[in-house]
Length: 82
Image (cartoon, rainbow, N blue to C red; front, side, top):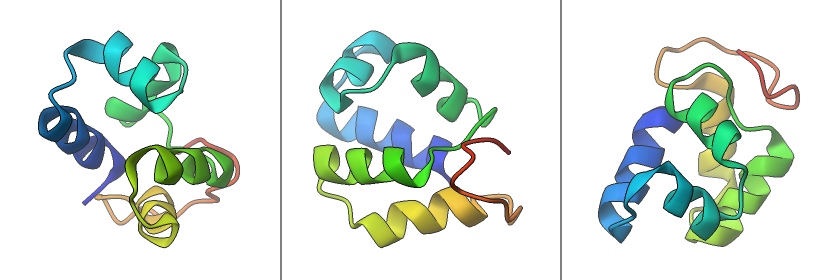
């Protein structure tokens, strides 16, 4: 599973309505959340730490999703870009 699918699952599971509410609840910028949801960028390791704390998801799981993603495209997770 990649970050976009994981985020959509978090939104559905927690009943968040829309990007703004999700971003507010996760403590991230809405524009960054949109980029993650559309696979334009992936969270940095620092962002993964923040998301892990906000959701209770193991950090290692998030870093793996951000590093490999659902498409198998490995990249440097520290740069936040694909």
